[in-house]
Image 1 (cartoon, rainbow, N blue to C red):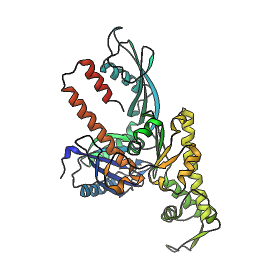
Image 2: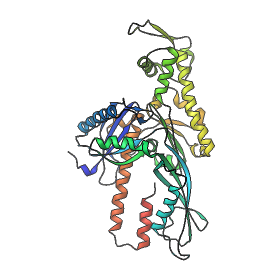
Image 3: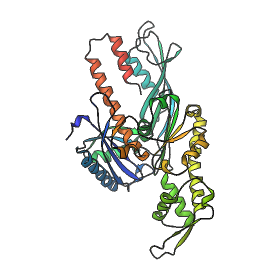
Image 4: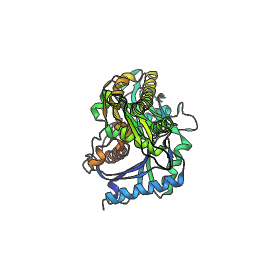
Length: 413
């Protein structure tokens, strides 16, 4: 049994699966070591949100039990991934007047200006999941990464806020707490997938991460090491299945099998005119499926999803931040031909997300559908390092200005 204080657990409540990932933190600041993964078919979640508490609880228990057995740990707390159509993101600006003209800016001033940026434009029903700071402005001087210790009267900051509906965020938290588990933090799934998949170079150069899940498509943009945009579409792999079931007039289970075994988004010469025969089931007659029609249906839905993201990035002026590449995660990343389609839509190179900065179970690290769970562990590891560094700094005999500068640095995203 491992030291429980060094264990971090990420819990993803997905539309197609519940996934728990157990990681052990390194004492020397190295990458988390993945000890175990637990999965269960998700029956109580639709479009990223819980719709049946009882079924969701059963599935969460199953996934956690499998993860505990594989990792040989007892899970007591989790970093909880959240998604849903109510989640969005926007860039905001905050300002703060320092009381004295010739007083140095302190960490307290920084906290005030970030708080001002956080509360602006957030309605009473919205909750800020993440507030990621960009750069500060002191007395009109822009591009300052750390204003602590500078002399100035006017302090401003630009931030990116990822928010969600407060009540709808409370439902998954309460379900998890009803299972006698503590929630260390809630984390946007799109951010978690980015943390698992992107290298520091990709974050700096500018990369769009798209997590194509069962019920939602989450996305996040990094540029110059900063989180620039986040968003959610209430469309995912289940919608592809529904499209096929409707068009071919077949059961959902048969449509899902078709999608997995014969699906894709490329129309090639070798599939033109080809048909598949579905065997008779439950008294239904055999059915012939045109393979080209199947691919066209999937192609139209996936293309529409990607273009909706591209349109929003254009509207927000974010597109220039994504020119170095697009990284696809989630089960949808395995759709044949989706990388080429993404390259055509975004006019940038596309790749499948692979977990970086981890060690341990390769079966999980090499599959894009585990990106969110792994990213939740990564988020927990980052929080732990910040707590340890902050504790260390607080015990050192440093001048106030130096101490506050370090503390400000540690709070950066």
